[in-house]
Length: 254
Image (cartoon, rainbow, N blue to C red; front, side, top):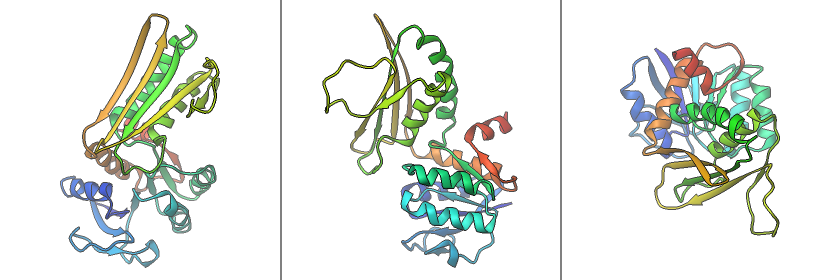
């Protein structure tokens, strides 16, 4: 049985994962960490990792970017495997993720769903055909009104996947309102929508002359991300130090 700590247990994703873990074999949440306290989750909740007294095999993080530095320090110092799901990390924090992965196993993904990670591969195949043919690339992402970072980590991951396939030829455009210039064919436009209770929608548009191809992914509940996070925790526990992705989880399961 894999023993797991839920970092950010009182948030929306933390609660979703808590419910899913109760129905999943092979894993048990033994403790939670959150600035809030909640006795209804079925496990002890601590205000910090340093105060946690429960032994564990892996940490799953769905907290906030401001808590990531302390989390990485703890996992590196204690050789604790970490599934890092929080998005909106700075460049400095991303470098720290890489440094921490030299001390312990770290799995980072901007999106934990199986569908999105399959889409990343499909986009690379499409880009290799459509980009040389002159298709423009635009990404539109939509999320609920409580999401604080924009663009979403998933939107950036989609753009990065295309850019990687095309040898980093693209740069990203987040705002067209500040200048009046013709569109650069080597830019990927990324637009963000925030409203209501939208769980997550991503459209990748390849716009050519007289034809448009759109790849879409819609998440109807947070459960798709929670299930992926738990699968990642099962995969990561006991792994050697290194930086892992959901692609490794999918490959191991296939």
